[in-house]
Image (cartoon, rainbow, N blue to C red; front, side):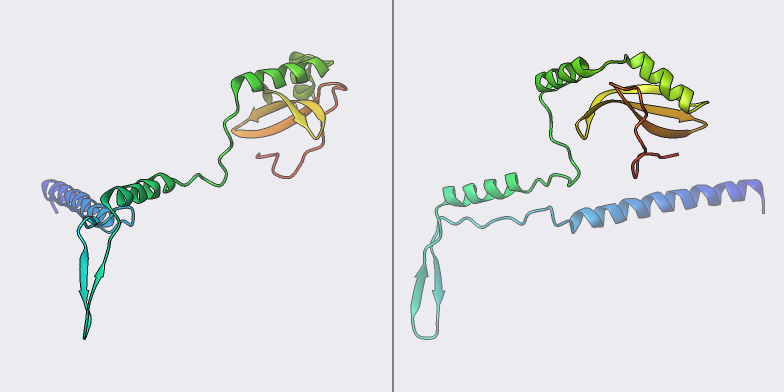
Length: 169
């Protein structure tokens, strides 16, 4: 098989894959449950005929229908289960200041303690945290693509024991 023939087949296959992908994406969008069917204008009364009598069913005015649609659209947004609440920066700053007031060792000392205990790791601080009533420095250490999280008690300088899920490397 010649080089030109192989090249042509490659490009043809690539174009075919792109066209099929776009077609599949178009079908997926067309059948998406997020699309809404048009709503009939509800201002005109509807007449329903039964076997022996005529019954008139009154529909809601157009404004009420619009209100219902608007309510449904605004309630459609789902929040991820693991989403954290947004904290107020002023509240966060006040909490950080309160935690800093309880610390007896500096951030640099906490980094040195962690680097001594975990030789070869380079640590950066994630700031002061309240860990079950104890103020700690949250430190992230990396070495050869692995990372660990270490917590150093800001009062005693002791490294807190690891907890489940704390070490990634």
